[in-house]
Image (cartoon, rainbow, N blue to C red; front, side, top):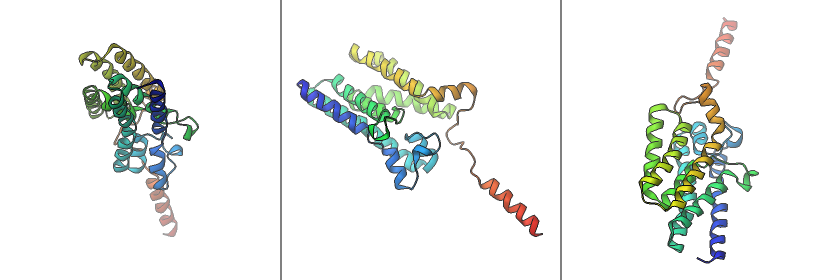
Amino acid sequence: MNPIETTMLLLGAYFLGAVPFGVLVSRAKGVDIMETGSKNPGATNVYRTLGATYGVLVFILDALKGVIPAVIGVQLSGQVWIGFLAGVFAVIGHSLSPFLKFKGGKGVATGFGALLGSVPLVAISAISVFFVIVAITRFVSLGAIIAAWSMVVFGFVFPVAQGMQIAFVLMAIFITIRHKENIKRLLNGTERKIGKEKKTSEPEEEKELTSDQKKQD
């Protein structure tokens, strides 16, 4: 690939990554995800707000934003690092989307896609760590952070170029920074566990109903 083709690939990856699928899917259900829950357009907030079906859908769509440019980059250039770089640009687009005033998700699903499209062994290993940590702790954020750093470890376990190893470290740092608020909540014990959502207003409604019934009695 010549410099112009590489530039076009990276720009295309950025704008593909910037497509806010979490916002679009939620909007189709009549919900503004940017004003709901954690106000994050990622799969976890969609899961908490709309349920598992839509959360998984957004995860897959966000992952594809990383997979597609990574695969195209590898196929066109014949070099894994170009594919991964394209995937990284998709992660940047996802996290700093011009369609959301340069806000966005935390880059976990799209980062996984970038890995899957360029170094699948590292991707599968890292997401396995993610699922194990989430299954044990029920903290998605903790699973994402540990999985990101496990990617660095697997970069040494599997044969990848030294430049890729450095890129893995930078991506792990980026994902960790994007989770800074989650880290604060983990440390002070207020981070929400997956599957243990805040109760709705139903109990309050029940109380009001009981109060009204008492008045009627």
